[in-house]
Length: 94
Picture 1: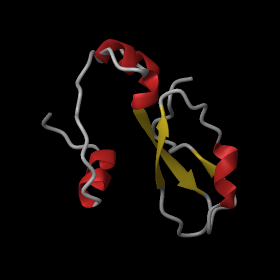
Picture 2 (picture 1 turned 90 degrees about the vertical axis):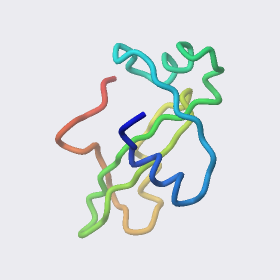
Picture 3 (picture 1 turned 45 degrees about the vertical axis):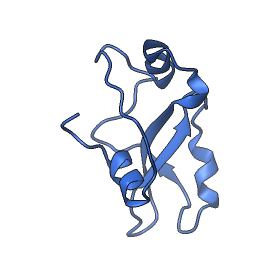
């Protein structure tokens, strides 16, 4: 793989071992990716970028299991996070 994602950079910084799998660009969910790789969905994670609306708050890079339902309502419990949303340039498909 020639392009490193932000998730990969975070894992590298923390010296976490991982394996990169490439699959068809027609796959749009982590569950579909798991199926294409012949892996159980519980072993695959999806990465999400979440924008916090607090002043000067940095975006969050969130990794969740492929089978998890993403609910932004859980983030306001984090420090400096009152509300959040998806980046404006590109929103995930539902």
